[in-house]
Length: 170
Image 1 (cartoon, rainbow, N blue to C red):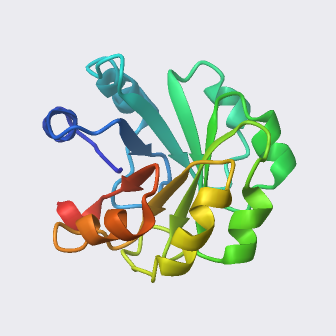
Image 2 (tube, helix red, strand yellow):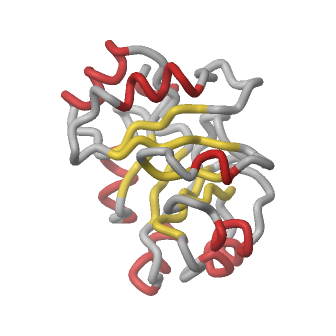
């Protein structure tokens, strides 16, 4: 997540990434302009999804022609997710009740569970999440403080559908 140039995209794809995140949150150090991200999308193989990372965006309809998914990282509600013009990954801070709230929401392709409100590299104990993952309808992606030193253990313990790495692997 948070890729901004061709070399980063090539490296991530070469390492086996199934999705590449482009951050459209202006205050983020990983912010990228939409035109630049769309140019990078052109180099993605067909089996790699481009994800537009958004935070409380009032302009979701402007992503109707985006060639990938949307990751919503703010205070969006279920109606906004259901009406989004593209498939959605809803990012939330780890809380059992929040995971259960979002599970099965219309147009939701995955729930990204983070150790913080997002982008802070904060880990969390995945063992409680691991207990409920088999009971959920919606795939879970784990994020937050994942590094080469801990990502294997997080995957082993929780068996998520995916992991989202950024600063921990830079």
